Length: 381
Image (tube, rainbow, N blue to C red; front, side):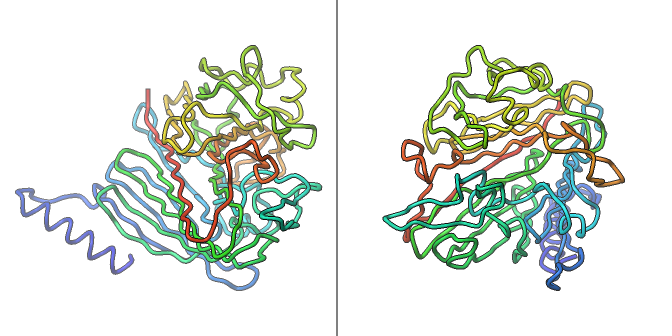
Protein backbone atom coordinates (compact mmCIF):
# COMPACT_ATOMS: atom_id res chain seq x y z
CA UNK A 1 0.00 0.00 0.00
CA UNK A 2 1.18 3.50 -0.83
CA UNK A 3 2.83 5.01 2.28
CA UNK A 4 0.83 8.23 2.08
CA UNK A 5 -2.39 6.24 1.95
CA UNK A 6 -1.38 4.09 4.90
CA UNK A 7 -0.89 7.24 6.94
CA UNK A 8 -4.17 8.70 5.78
CA UNK A 9 -6.16 5.62 6.65
CA UNK A 10 -4.41 5.12 9.96
CA UNK A 11 -5.24 8.69 10.88
CA UNK A 12 -8.82 8.12 9.83
CA UNK A 13 -9.09 4.98 11.95
CA UNK A 14 -7.61 6.77 14.96
CA UNK A 15 -10.13 9.59 14.61
CA UNK A 16 -13.02 7.13 14.53
CA UNK A 17 -11.77 5.28 17.61
CA UNK A 18 -11.34 8.50 19.55
CA UNK A 19 -15.07 9.14 19.34
CA UNK A 20 -16.07 5.90 21.01
CA UNK A 21 -15.80 3.01 18.58
CA UNK A 22 -14.19 -0.26 19.60
CA UNK A 23 -12.80 -1.38 16.25
CA UNK A 24 -13.50 -0.73 12.62
CA UNK A 25 -13.12 -3.38 9.96
CA UNK A 26 -10.60 -2.37 7.26
CA UNK A 27 -13.24 -3.32 4.66
CA UNK A 28 -15.37 -0.44 5.94
CA UNK A 29 -12.68 2.10 5.10
CA UNK A 30 -12.08 3.90 1.84
CA UNK A 31 -8.72 2.78 0.48
CA UNK A 32 -6.52 3.06 -2.57
CA UNK A 33 -3.66 0.70 -3.37
CA UNK A 34 -1.39 0.22 -6.37
CA UNK A 35 0.33 -2.69 -8.09
CA UNK A 36 2.39 -3.31 -11.21
CA UNK A 37 0.41 -4.14 -14.36
CA UNK A 38 3.14 -4.90 -16.89
CA UNK A 39 4.99 -2.79 -19.44
CA UNK A 40 4.15 -1.22 -22.77
CA UNK A 41 5.90 -2.35 -25.95
CA UNK A 42 8.29 0.60 -25.41
CA UNK A 43 9.13 -0.71 -21.94
CA UNK A 44 7.18 1.87 -19.92
CA UNK A 45 5.93 0.52 -16.60
CA UNK A 46 2.14 0.52 -16.13
CA UNK A 47 0.47 0.53 -12.72
CA UNK A 48 -3.05 -0.39 -11.65
CA UNK A 49 -4.72 1.50 -8.80
CA UNK A 50 -7.53 -0.17 -6.87
CA UNK A 51 -10.06 2.20 -5.27
CA UNK A 52 -12.45 0.86 -2.60
CA UNK A 53 -15.19 2.84 -0.89
CA UNK A 54 -16.71 1.91 2.47
CA UNK A 55 -19.79 0.43 0.74
CA UNK A 56 -17.71 -2.28 -0.93
CA UNK A 57 -17.66 -0.79 -4.44
CA UNK A 58 -14.38 -1.07 -6.34
CA UNK A 59 -12.77 0.66 -9.30
CA UNK A 60 -9.47 -0.38 -10.86
CA UNK A 61 -7.73 2.19 -13.03
CA UNK A 62 -4.63 1.86 -15.20
CA UNK A 63 -1.99 4.53 -15.71
CA UNK A 64 -2.04 3.32 -19.34
CA UNK A 65 -4.79 5.26 -21.10
CA UNK A 66 -6.50 6.16 -17.83
CA UNK A 67 -8.42 2.93 -18.41
CA UNK A 68 -11.13 1.82 -15.97
CA UNK A 69 -10.20 -1.87 -15.97
CA UNK A 70 -12.83 -2.94 -13.43
CA UNK A 71 -15.89 -1.36 -11.82
CA UNK A 72 -17.69 -3.50 -9.24
CA UNK A 73 -21.15 -2.39 -8.10
CA UNK A 74 -23.95 -4.10 -6.10
CA UNK A 75 -27.28 -5.35 -7.44
CA UNK A 76 -30.64 -5.16 -5.64
CA UNK A 77 -29.64 -8.15 -3.47
CA UNK A 78 -26.30 -6.60 -2.52
CA UNK A 79 -24.35 -8.93 -4.81
CA UNK A 80 -21.38 -7.26 -6.49
CA UNK A 81 -20.46 -7.68 -10.17
CA UNK A 82 -17.96 -6.08 -12.51
CA UNK A 83 -20.06 -3.93 -14.86
CA UNK A 84 -17.42 -2.90 -17.44
CA UNK A 85 -15.79 -4.84 -20.28
CA UNK A 86 -12.03 -5.14 -20.59
CA UNK A 87 -9.01 -7.39 -20.20
CA UNK A 88 -7.36 -9.19 -17.30
CA UNK A 89 -3.89 -8.40 -18.68
CA UNK A 90 -2.26 -5.30 -20.16
CA UNK A 91 -1.42 -7.14 -23.38
CA UNK A 92 -5.09 -7.19 -24.38
CA UNK A 93 -5.26 -3.40 -24.29
CA UNK A 94 -2.00 -3.17 -26.25
CA UNK A 95 -3.07 -5.67 -28.92
CA UNK A 96 -6.71 -4.93 -29.68
CA UNK A 97 -9.16 -2.71 -27.90
CA UNK A 98 -12.20 -0.71 -29.03
CA UNK A 99 -11.31 1.89 -26.35
CA UNK A 100 -12.42 -0.31 -23.43
CA UNK A 101 -12.65 1.96 -20.36
CA UNK A 102 -10.39 4.58 -21.88
CA UNK A 103 -9.81 8.25 -21.32
CA UNK A 104 -10.37 9.67 -24.81
CA UNK A 105 -8.57 12.71 -26.26
CA UNK A 106 -7.45 15.05 -27.58
CA UNK A 107 -10.72 14.88 -29.46
CA UNK A 108 -13.40 12.34 -28.59
CA UNK A 109 -15.51 11.17 -31.52
CA UNK A 110 -14.89 11.96 -35.19
CA UNK A 111 -13.37 14.90 -37.04
CA UNK A 112 -14.33 14.78 -40.72
CA UNK A 113 -11.43 14.20 -43.17
CA UNK A 114 -9.12 14.52 -40.15
CA UNK A 115 -8.66 18.24 -40.62
CA UNK A 116 -9.85 21.58 -39.28
CA UNK A 117 -8.97 25.25 -39.57
CA UNK A 118 -8.29 27.37 -36.50
CA UNK A 119 -7.49 31.09 -36.63
CA UNK A 120 -6.56 30.83 -40.30
CA UNK A 121 -4.30 27.78 -40.01
CA UNK A 122 -5.40 24.39 -41.32
CA UNK A 123 -4.28 21.36 -39.33
CA UNK A 124 -4.11 17.83 -40.74
CA UNK A 125 -4.61 15.17 -38.09
CA UNK A 126 -3.69 11.50 -38.09
CA UNK A 127 -6.59 9.61 -39.70
CA UNK A 128 -7.56 6.29 -38.14
CA UNK A 129 -11.23 5.83 -39.08
CA UNK A 130 -11.27 5.67 -42.84
CA UNK A 131 -10.60 9.23 -43.99
CA UNK A 132 -11.57 10.61 -40.57
CA UNK A 133 -9.83 11.16 -37.24
CA UNK A 134 -11.40 9.25 -34.33
CA UNK A 135 -10.81 9.55 -30.57
CA UNK A 136 -7.51 11.42 -30.81
CA UNK A 137 -5.79 9.55 -33.62
CA UNK A 138 -3.36 6.66 -33.95
CA UNK A 139 -1.93 7.21 -30.46
CA UNK A 140 -4.51 9.16 -28.54
CA UNK A 141 -4.73 9.69 -24.80
CA UNK A 142 -6.01 6.10 -24.47
CA UNK A 143 -2.58 4.76 -25.53
CA UNK A 144 -0.17 6.82 -23.42
CA UNK A 145 1.12 6.30 -19.89
CA UNK A 146 -0.07 8.93 -17.40
CA UNK A 147 1.68 9.94 -14.18
CA UNK A 148 -0.37 9.19 -11.07
CA UNK A 149 -0.91 10.63 -7.62
CA UNK A 150 -3.29 9.00 -5.15
CA UNK A 151 -5.08 10.13 -2.01
CA UNK A 152 -8.13 9.45 0.12
CA UNK A 153 -10.35 12.51 0.51
CA UNK A 154 -13.60 13.24 2.27
CA UNK A 155 -15.57 12.01 -0.76
CA UNK A 156 -13.63 8.77 -1.18
CA UNK A 157 -10.44 7.40 -2.74
CA UNK A 158 -9.05 9.55 -5.53
CA UNK A 159 -6.56 9.10 -8.35
CA UNK A 160 -5.14 12.09 -10.23
CA UNK A 161 -3.57 11.33 -13.61
CA UNK A 162 -1.49 13.87 -15.54
CA UNK A 163 -0.12 14.00 -19.08
CA UNK A 164 1.54 16.61 -21.28
CA UNK A 165 0.58 16.30 -24.95
CA UNK A 166 3.30 17.95 -27.04
CA UNK A 167 2.67 20.54 -29.72
CA UNK A 168 2.01 18.63 -32.97
CA UNK A 169 1.14 15.31 -31.33
CA UNK A 170 -1.22 13.49 -33.72
CA UNK A 171 -1.35 16.77 -35.65
CA UNK A 172 -2.94 18.89 -32.89
CA UNK A 173 -1.49 22.33 -32.09
CA UNK A 174 -0.24 23.46 -28.69
CA UNK A 175 1.51 21.93 -25.70
CA UNK A 176 -1.46 20.69 -23.68
CA UNK A 177 -1.26 19.94 -19.95
CA UNK A 178 -4.07 17.59 -18.94
CA UNK A 179 -5.22 16.34 -15.54
CA UNK A 180 -7.88 13.70 -14.96
CA UNK A 181 -9.13 13.06 -11.43
CA UNK A 182 -11.05 9.86 -10.70
CA UNK A 183 -13.02 9.64 -7.44
CA UNK A 184 -14.96 6.59 -6.23
CA UNK A 185 -17.43 8.33 -3.94
CA UNK A 186 -19.29 7.02 -0.91
CA UNK A 187 -22.47 7.29 -3.03
CA UNK A 188 -21.22 4.63 -5.48
CA UNK A 189 -20.36 7.23 -8.10
CA UNK A 190 -17.35 7.17 -10.37
CA UNK A 191 -16.62 10.86 -10.78
CA UNK A 192 -14.26 12.09 -13.50
CA UNK A 193 -12.96 15.65 -13.56
CA UNK A 194 -10.86 16.80 -16.50
CA UNK A 195 -8.84 20.03 -16.67
CA UNK A 196 -6.43 21.24 -19.33
CA UNK A 197 -4.34 24.25 -20.36
CA UNK A 198 -2.60 25.05 -23.64
CA UNK A 199 0.13 27.42 -24.85
CA UNK A 200 -1.38 27.74 -28.35
CA UNK A 201 -4.98 27.80 -29.62
CA UNK A 202 -6.19 24.23 -30.02
CA UNK A 203 -9.35 22.10 -30.00
CA UNK A 204 -10.23 19.75 -27.17
CA UNK A 205 -13.01 17.26 -26.44
CA UNK A 206 -12.25 14.84 -23.60
CA UNK A 207 -14.56 11.98 -22.66
CA UNK A 208 -14.72 8.53 -21.10
CA UNK A 209 -15.31 5.28 -22.97
CA UNK A 210 -16.31 2.47 -20.58
CA UNK A 211 -18.36 -0.35 -22.06
CA UNK A 212 -21.11 -1.04 -19.52
CA UNK A 213 -23.21 -4.12 -18.93
CA UNK A 214 -25.27 -3.64 -15.77
CA UNK A 215 -25.96 -7.37 -15.53
CA UNK A 216 -22.20 -7.86 -15.23
CA UNK A 217 -19.57 -8.09 -17.95
CA UNK A 218 -19.85 -11.35 -19.85
CA UNK A 219 -23.48 -11.86 -18.81
CA UNK A 220 -25.18 -11.59 -22.20
CA UNK A 221 -26.34 -8.64 -24.27
CA UNK A 222 -27.70 -5.24 -23.20
CA UNK A 223 -30.79 -5.20 -25.44
CA UNK A 224 -33.07 -5.51 -22.39
CA UNK A 225 -31.49 -2.53 -20.60
CA UNK A 226 -34.01 0.31 -20.39
CA UNK A 227 -32.66 3.72 -21.42
CA UNK A 228 -33.80 7.28 -20.78
CA UNK A 229 -31.96 10.11 -22.57
CA UNK A 230 -32.74 13.72 -21.66
CA UNK A 231 -32.74 15.05 -25.22
CA UNK A 232 -35.23 16.42 -27.76
CA UNK A 233 -32.71 16.43 -30.62
CA UNK A 234 -29.78 14.57 -32.15
CA UNK A 235 -27.05 15.68 -34.55
CA UNK A 236 -27.71 13.39 -37.55
CA UNK A 237 -24.84 11.81 -39.47
CA UNK A 238 -24.06 10.85 -43.06
CA UNK A 239 -23.04 7.35 -44.18
CA UNK A 240 -19.49 8.01 -42.95
CA UNK A 241 -20.88 8.79 -39.47
CA UNK A 242 -19.87 12.45 -39.80
CA UNK A 243 -22.42 14.96 -38.51
CA UNK A 244 -24.23 16.97 -41.15
CA UNK A 245 -24.21 20.09 -38.95
CA UNK A 246 -27.99 20.00 -38.61
CA UNK A 247 -30.21 19.20 -35.64
CA UNK A 248 -33.04 16.66 -35.84
CA UNK A 249 -36.11 16.29 -33.63
CA UNK A 250 -36.30 12.83 -32.05
CA UNK A 251 -40.13 12.75 -32.06
CA UNK A 252 -41.45 9.72 -33.92
CA UNK A 253 -37.98 8.25 -34.48
CA UNK A 254 -36.00 5.39 -32.88
CA UNK A 255 -33.84 8.10 -31.28
CA UNK A 256 -36.59 9.18 -28.88
CA UNK A 257 -35.61 7.96 -25.42
CA UNK A 258 -37.52 10.61 -23.49
CA UNK A 259 -39.80 7.75 -22.43
CA UNK A 260 -37.62 4.93 -21.01
CA UNK A 261 -37.29 2.26 -23.68
CA UNK A 262 -35.35 -1.01 -23.95
CA UNK A 263 -32.32 -0.72 -26.22
CA UNK A 264 -33.44 -3.66 -28.34
CA UNK A 265 -36.94 -2.33 -29.01
CA UNK A 266 -36.00 -0.20 -32.06
CA UNK A 267 -32.33 -0.94 -32.69
CA UNK A 268 -33.15 -2.65 -36.01
CA UNK A 269 -35.57 0.07 -37.15
CA UNK A 270 -35.11 0.81 -40.89
CA UNK A 271 -34.44 4.51 -40.17
CA UNK A 272 -31.47 5.16 -42.51
CA UNK A 273 -29.53 7.33 -40.06
CA UNK A 274 -29.86 4.64 -37.39
CA UNK A 275 -28.66 1.99 -39.83
CA UNK A 276 -25.52 3.99 -40.65
CA UNK A 277 -24.48 2.88 -37.12
CA UNK A 278 -25.52 0.13 -37.76
CA UNK A 279 -27.59 0.62 -34.62
CA UNK A 280 -27.07 3.27 -31.97
CA UNK A 281 -23.80 5.19 -32.33
CA UNK A 282 -25.06 8.77 -32.34
CA UNK A 283 -24.88 12.07 -30.47
CA UNK A 284 -27.84 13.44 -28.53
CA UNK A 285 -28.28 17.17 -27.77
CA UNK A 286 -28.90 17.26 -24.03
CA UNK A 287 -31.75 19.44 -22.73
CA UNK A 288 -29.91 21.94 -20.53
CA UNK A 289 -28.20 25.31 -20.80
CA UNK A 290 -24.67 25.24 -22.26
CA UNK A 291 -22.17 24.51 -19.49
CA UNK A 292 -24.80 23.54 -16.90
CA UNK A 293 -24.32 20.31 -14.94
CA UNK A 294 -27.26 17.97 -15.24
CA UNK A 295 -28.69 14.52 -15.87
CA UNK A 296 -27.97 13.21 -19.35
CA UNK A 297 -29.19 9.62 -19.22
CA UNK A 298 -30.51 6.86 -16.96
CA UNK A 299 -30.16 3.15 -17.66
CA UNK A 300 -31.90 0.31 -15.76
CA UNK A 301 -31.12 -3.41 -15.98
CA UNK A 302 -34.39 -5.00 -14.84
CA UNK A 303 -33.07 -8.37 -13.62
CA UNK A 304 -30.27 -7.12 -11.37
CA UNK A 305 -32.03 -3.86 -10.53
CA UNK A 306 -28.82 -1.92 -11.18
CA UNK A 307 -29.32 1.67 -12.26
CA UNK A 308 -26.75 3.91 -13.95
CA UNK A 309 -27.26 7.65 -14.13
CA UNK A 310 -24.97 9.76 -16.31
CA UNK A 311 -24.43 13.37 -15.23
CA UNK A 312 -22.22 15.94 -16.93
CA UNK A 313 -21.72 19.58 -17.87
CA UNK A 314 -21.08 18.56 -21.49
CA UNK A 315 -23.70 19.57 -24.12
CA UNK A 316 -23.83 16.20 -25.91
CA UNK A 317 -23.98 12.48 -25.21
CA UNK A 318 -22.74 9.78 -27.55
CA UNK A 319 -24.75 6.61 -26.93
CA UNK A 320 -23.18 3.53 -28.51
CA UNK A 321 -24.73 0.05 -28.33
CA UNK A 322 -21.65 -2.09 -28.97
CA UNK A 323 -22.47 -2.59 -32.65
CA UNK A 324 -18.89 -3.46 -33.62
CA UNK A 325 -18.26 -6.11 -30.94
CA UNK A 326 -18.14 -9.20 -33.15
CA UNK A 327 -17.04 -12.16 -31.03
CA UNK A 328 -13.36 -11.83 -31.91
CA UNK A 329 -12.39 -10.40 -28.49
CA UNK A 330 -11.99 -12.61 -25.43
CA UNK A 331 -12.04 -10.41 -22.35
CA UNK A 332 -12.02 -10.74 -18.58
CA UNK A 333 -12.61 -14.21 -17.18
CA UNK A 334 -12.64 -15.69 -20.68
CA UNK A 335 -15.82 -13.85 -21.68
CA UNK A 336 -16.29 -13.57 -25.45
CA UNK A 337 -17.66 -10.14 -26.33
CA UNK A 338 -20.34 -10.26 -29.00
CA UNK A 339 -22.50 -7.62 -30.69
CA UNK A 340 -24.56 -5.55 -28.21
CA UNK A 341 -22.84 -7.11 -25.17
CA UNK A 342 -22.26 -3.59 -23.78
CA UNK A 343 -23.17 0.05 -24.24
CA UNK A 344 -21.21 3.29 -23.92
CA UNK A 345 -22.46 6.65 -22.63
CA UNK A 346 -19.88 9.29 -23.56
CA UNK A 347 -20.63 12.86 -22.43
CA UNK A 348 -18.85 15.22 -24.83
CA UNK A 349 -19.09 18.14 -27.23
CA UNK A 350 -20.72 17.34 -30.56
CA UNK A 351 -18.77 15.33 -33.14
CA UNK A 352 -16.83 17.28 -35.80
CA UNK A 353 -17.43 20.54 -33.91
CA UNK A 354 -14.19 22.13 -35.21
CA UNK A 355 -15.76 22.05 -38.70
CA UNK A 356 -19.27 23.07 -37.64
CA UNK A 357 -19.34 26.77 -36.67
CA UNK A 358 -22.99 26.49 -35.53
CA UNK A 359 -22.02 23.93 -32.85
CA UNK A 360 -20.75 25.00 -29.39
CA UNK A 361 -17.06 25.87 -29.66
CA UNK A 362 -14.35 23.35 -28.69
CA UNK A 363 -11.52 25.88 -29.01
CA UNK A 364 -9.18 26.25 -26.03
CA UNK A 365 -6.98 29.35 -25.96
CA UNK A 366 -3.88 30.19 -23.93
CA UNK A 367 -4.87 31.62 -20.55
CA UNK A 368 -8.09 29.61 -20.46
CA UNK A 369 -8.67 26.46 -18.40
CA UNK A 370 -10.71 23.64 -19.91
CA UNK A 371 -12.87 21.85 -17.35
CA UNK A 372 -15.49 19.17 -17.59
CA UNK A 373 -17.06 16.73 -15.16
CA UNK A 374 -18.63 13.33 -15.78
CA UNK A 375 -20.37 11.34 -13.05
CA UNK A 376 -21.49 7.74 -13.43
CA UNK A 377 -23.82 7.20 -10.49
CA UNK A 378 -24.91 3.68 -9.53
CA UNK A 379 -27.93 2.68 -7.48
CA UNK A 380 -30.58 -0.07 -7.45
CA UNK A 381 -34.32 -0.27 -7.83
